[in-house]
Length: 544
Image (tube, rainbow, N blue to C red; front, side, top):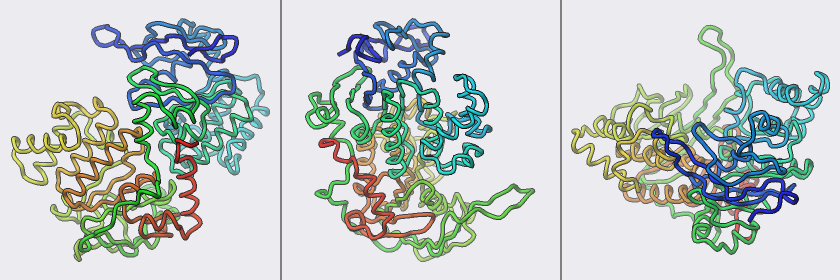
């Protein structure tokens, strides 16, 4: 329910939005939503992918994507109507009164400009500070957001920063003009749990210091429970429930909210990880070392510090092994080396007791088939000019030698097993949702009938309900085929659900490994204990 403009910072009253299709017809996406945001209040927008939460959040800045229109109702900021505001009015509000932090910090930053200069640009364009004052303000903002040695970091380019540092820089830019409302759209999706915890602590601290109101858009209910006062639950462009976080999460009225709460993965000591029952040794890794090269083909330079050091592990037939660690710990690098995509000059790989080539060219066709990988971003792993059905059929023809008819039938069966309709085979990757894209990528990997599947952060961008469904389907397929899996993730609840055993990476080294329940309940390394604390600090959303 909306509050009077005199009390609220933002008031939405029966707001409707839609997009114009190719026939110039408006397809509604937001249906008569009403809510209010008080000064200094933190409110979370939650819901599945496609629920309209990001569209609604962007509307708070008067922003609509290409083809977007306001179809009715009202949206006011401090009494100023945003749905009919002129561009110059919106320009005066954006960045100064209402600022936004987008999901991908790397895409929010200009890649060829130093990060300090990008904050200075905001200050020079939107404030009256002179060059010296703007420089001091920029350094102050970086320091306030927890950047160590801000003078040095300010001289770096975005690609030279970690994910957490980039997100802090974007938050610093958003806070540069002391806005009264800060909108954050999935700000922690790609971050590991310890970095996520640091960023959330930063957001809470910045909110307390500045007194700004906060809108947090996320599919992670645990993040909302940790940061927000109230929550707004969306489904199919409608608000199905809203209220205080504790009340909504502990006693949800709507069946949809109850489903979201139930789908939120947790590390629940009463529900142990699946029992380990590996078969004979499938893959052995001994003394793996890897460093990323530095320089170019013309000007050689010493390699960076090792990304992986002294890595030794084994995976048995049908075994599921989890790999956890902070961003930069070497998790994805390990997966790429085992898949043969990266080559380690110092490494001994064995496959069923025989030497395994360290790159794809050195592996036999059978080894290429038996080791498959599913990547974090499924969209970038598909050919955008090829339907997903064509991608699956190509894998079936190449690896299994199937003719066109049997390949199409097998592709349909794989899609059905993952809860996808056969009609989705005719779609291009960009026409599928994130969850559908990831299911298609998993289907393509299983099309080769692999013995080892390497999964690299495959659920990081999915909402809770889709993540839960996908993991259930993956677990069923793995169990049915006795496929070994290496699950790389920063989400410890995924490991708790899927992997009987886990290894912990820090700065490229294995610092702890063993049964998942033992490692999580009684960690021996301080680093592991810190990861567990970060993952469980807000995990019981029903009692937060």
